[in-house]
Image (tube, rainbow, N blue to C red):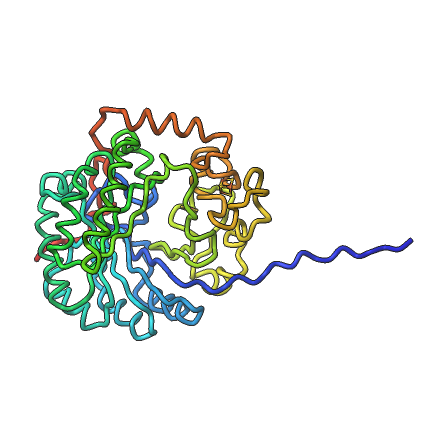
Length: 384
Ligand code: SF4
Ligand code: FES
């Protein structure tokens, strides 16, 4: 009998990552009710040291990472932020500071620019003081953000405004675009809330209506023409009202990775919500070993893991089946089709729930960090 040996399954070696998001800390003075940080926040004493972060940046540069996003929590809560930025810049990484602005002073902004900071992404929670300070749960936050924007543009570091929008502030998007122009931003990211973590807790207070989404989409399209050459507008649509899901992270483990404050290396910010996965830290293994060889990163690479209807769908290399964490949260199976997709058997239920949440009159938020305050260990002073 002629036996034909079964060829071993050859996994194509993934490309190196392009971007790394370094969550330097989960500490933050704000309490945004849609924060992408996990419900279990890492405490200050468990954060990586400056030396550990710097070694992680070195490894990232060697691995092929080009863009380093310095994020949090509020990265300015790290007193060594300038030292970390300088080290990353010296490794040749393009450094982007993602900040609420709170904890930055004019002196610190100048020091960061001198250290080689390439870009600042400043969040705003509304176009008015009342809205912004209520959403962020931080009185005086709006005024400080306005000052920070001025300090940043004075250094010549390019500024992006990050406007997270939802049911309660979507009607201010037009004013937020104008505000971004007045602040000297070159780009604005109009990002509709993604319903993970804290946002999932606040669905009824945050979910926009379909009419609001359509109105915002039309407004953005019009503004793109009106502000061409003045302001670049990136728009992240509300996927609960969409027909197809977003290509979350551009595909699992394909182009980016996240490192948590305690050094856990994740394929996306919400990956720890998938209980079957085990994650290593940069204290356990090198960044390269984790990227190429860890089971967590390899679990949803390619399309071998896909189930129907994704497996035989023409869009499977466009959206990669959507978001694994959303599938986990809403269907209880991270390998399922993201229920945002019209082909998912769970899509109708998702759309009905989104409609109920959008129609809700609830306005109160469960702020990040809960009643005890936004910062998990209240260990930072925010003085000018
Ligand atoms: Fe994307 Fe899967 Fe839906 Fe096809 S079935 S559009 S691959 S999520
Ligand atoms: Fe984890 Fe989308 S947030 S895959």
